[in-house]
Length: 393
Ligand code: C2E
Ligand code: CA
Ligand code: CA
Image 1 (cartoon, rainbow, N blue to C red):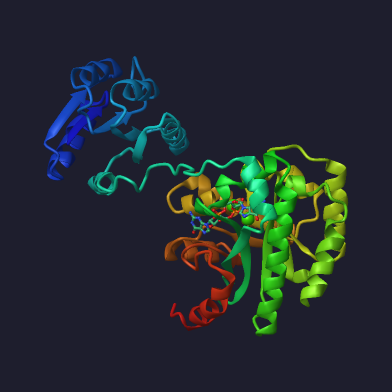
Image 2 (tube, rainbow, N blue to C red; image 1 turned 30 degrees about the horizontal axis):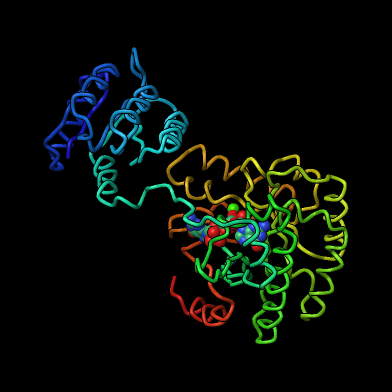
């Protein structure tokens, strides 16, 4: 493995060199500025495996050096280093990813040997940190056919109470069982459905199956809320509340058991219809959750305008809260805001015990995530519930 260390501080280059050699990396190139780095990359075309790059350097800065890496060493994995604000590091990391570079991580100075070891362990797992690519290329006409043919179905991810751990509900997540492509994930077809006027038909199918499934669980004594994702474009059908009410009655479940998760989507919707429909959904007793809270699509203005019952904090803030002060502050403030507005606080993306403990300590109400359970077919939920009750702390 050939490693390039770019930093204007001789001390950093030296101590990083010592750490790297201690970890078995003997082939180390050093540059004290961006110009030298560029020269070295050109002198070793296609041979550099890892670049440690400082952001703040006189002359060419780290951001410019990233562009040089793209041009001259595109296969290299990068580690960004800075004594600056962690958000500058985060932004530079995002930039590197959007350049198509493989980012092993960022190091806030002072750098410790443990941090470096942690990052390089990741380097050994090549796939782990590649940005996920949608491997499915689907045509709108095919999607329209699939919806009509009933190929869309929900899987269900458990939501549990952080206070006591009771299993209280599920989120329905759409999947497409495609005749030739196999199981297609929602990222590959929801945006397409939204862009081609197909989302209403899709939402109908997910809602219908989820409400019916909820009725089946109730009949077995498992009383669960079911949350269904709806897009902005779904809020053009003025009969949506009546339609869902009829379905809930048909399945024998109370309206309060059905929660609609709303994300303001990319296409502007009719604000009058949105207000009309959300107000009537609430009047009929349905729950209304503001999804992905904290992201660009879910804003304070929406919170003020619409009669939400639940605030669902986006998983990036949960995942980031243990390592980033900024994420943690956003998480804490969101919980505080939800409390003041008397909303239920749900968090998604809880992946570890440490994250569970943190969100519980912050006073969140409901948690969802891989630490608790993965999305699964409806038929597996009853067995999962029994296992969850039996699970030791
Ligand atoms: P979302 O509403 O934010 O749903 C949560 C997503 O996070 C799900 O991805 C879920 O599988 C994933 N997830 C759950 N726990 C964890 C965790 O611990 N770690 C991580 N990294 N991820 C976790 P999924 O099923 O791929 O859905 C992606 C998105 O597609 C959803 O994001 C939602 O925006 C959209 N979507 C799914 N089903 C529907 C639907 O029926 N209608 C609409 N309009 N959108 C849907
Ligand atoms: Ca959701
Ligand atoms: Ca989300």
